[in-house]
Length: 241
Ligand code: GLP
Image (cartoon, rainbow, N blue to C red; front, side, top):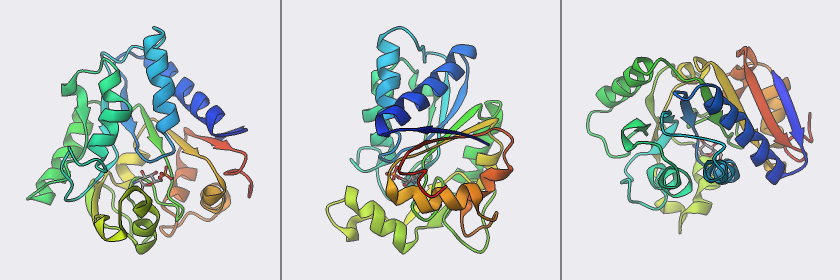
């Protein structure tokens, strides 16, 4: 595990963008695992700048997003499809055919999940997986539970996550109750994992992730077992370490 501690959100975003861009510069055909949420917004912003500055070229990368809310169409402003287009994809030169995001409107979830895992495997696997973290230690939408899933699956969101994520919706009732997410196996199989955290609200989850026992009650704690686990934390997120 390698921890980069920086001062604030801006520095976290810059450091994260430099790790992602180095990956893409070293391997133009990199397969990236991407995350949503407020945490990586600054990183995407900096990556777009790097693209305009001619530092980063995304024309040959392939991406697999972590998760999506169930029931939201790609046009819904709170869907992760919409987020990714708005914050990253529509500003860079990635071909649309290289973008993979779990679908939010599905009929046969078994098939859709197996298909997503197969596509990741067929791409050669994830070179660098970017992650944020939930206040309860969830990654993607792998929520604290007695058991965790290995592959892509449908999950019931915890009350805590519904509450936390309701800030993006006009009311708590509007927050979808289920999501589709890559499983812990898909995340752990990435060659490198980059977790970003900013702010006091993440401090306890970061402490449990870095220093706690490996437990399904804190899904991110499994990353202690990953041989190439990088954390970029601002002062507040690192304050309980
Ligand atoms: C959501 C996403 C996660 C994200 C987490 C933290 O529930 N499914 O992928 O890491 O929330 O979000 P934020 O970065 O907004 O704090």
